[in-house]
Structures are given as C-alpha cells and as structure tokens.
Amino acid sequence: MEAAGRLWQRLSGPQERRLLEILSYGLVGMGALSLLLLRFVRMPYGRYSTRRFGCPVPARLAWALQELPSLLVPLGLSLFSGAARVSEWPNRVLLALFIGHYAHRVLIFSFLIRGGKPTPFITFALALIFCVYNGYLQGRSLSNYAEYPSGWLKGPCFIVGFAGWLSGMTINIYSDHILRNLRKPGETGYKIPRGGLFEYVTGANFFGEILEWFGFALASCTIESAAFSICTLFILGSRAHQHHQWYLEKFEDYPKSRKIVIPFVL
Image (cartoon, rainbow, N blue to C red):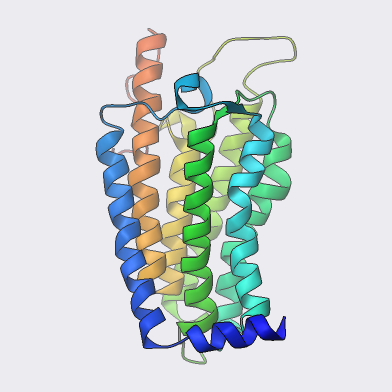
C-alpha cells in the first residue's frame, strides 16, 4: 500500500491536473455524442435489449458490476493514493456524497431488481468503462486537487448544492420504488407509472438523478463535477425521451400533459 501511495504521489502535479481537465471535456463530449446517437438508435438495455449487442448478462449482476468502479475507485484513491486533500472536511464530505450514491446503487438497488431483462454485454462493458473513467475523475479531483476555504460547508454553494443532491437522490429512490411495484405478483406486461413525479414527467427517476448530480456539482464547484452533471443530463435526458416515445406508442391513454424529464418544462 505504501508503494502505491508513493507511485500516486509521483504522478501528482500539473500534468495530472491538466489530464483531469481534458478528461472532463471528454466526459461532456461523450454525453453530447450519446445525445446525438440516441436520436437514431435506441439504447439497448431493459425493454430494448437485443442480442445484436452481445451475450446477455443477468440484470442484477450486470448492474452491480458495472457500477462497482464508481464505488471502489474513489474509495481506493482516498485511502491508498497518498491523497493531499482527503484530510480536509469539505473534500471528505463531497467524496462521501459521491461514494454514498454508488454504495446504494451497488449494495442495495442491484438486489432490489425484480427479474429485470438481461443486459447485452456491449452495453454492460460501456457502462463499466464509464464508471471507471468517472470514478477516477471525481475521486482524484476531490481527494487530491480540489481546494476549499475552511467555511465551505457553511457556505451557500454547498448548502444549496447539498439540498439538490439530497432531494434528487430521494426522488430517484422513490421513483425506482414506484417502477418496481407497478406489477402485482404474477402479473406480466407493462403499465403506466403513477404517483410521485411520474404525474408530471415520464422520466421521474432520471430527473431525480439529474437533479442529484447538478446539486453535487454546485456543492463541489469543480470542472470535473460540472462535466459529470452535464453528461448525466445528456444521457439520461436521451433515455427519458426514448421512454416517453415508447409509452406514447404503446398506450393510447398515456397522459399527454406529461413532460419528458423536467417538470413543466421539457
């Protein structure tokens, strides 16, 4: 472990800081490319799964493994890389917000999935790569480079951002609960989601996660967290649009007043 810490200390410096900035721009580009591609091709997962994108991976296993790097990479960087800023309370708290989200996704959400459709291998692999990429980006930024004044946790950016992060995570978890319980035991087929923010948007769970990461970006005020929030908006906004079109095609009585992902706006 000490050798690993010394290695990371040698890598630290202006060149790695510049690398993180470049990777941040790459993350936004990745989101923009996904936004463009998903205008023409449905993302192959869940109800849209197809074997053309590789052998299927069981839903629970795929979800847990693909999200795991976003939990382990920043945790490992914080503990074993000799991180210069991890002893500072603002950095610790912000890392805890990021890690806490993925701890829930890996250790709780994945085990709550009820008979989800298998994930095509290529879709699984792309999600895994994204989580390694973003786990390094957010983890290294907050553990080694981001600097905050001593009163940051009492300032408006953190307080408003944390409120957004907490509200978004709550909406996301509650919306996922609604989706899991649409069908009663023994029932099959799809139903129109009702309750919560699903009364206003098709992608209530996506809206919660978008709000969560924009809150995190405000609380962190780093280029890395801003890039992640924008990428999240592009990707999850595209997925919400995909779902919205599917519901409109499948259900004649689907509420026409529902927006796609942002209540009353879009």
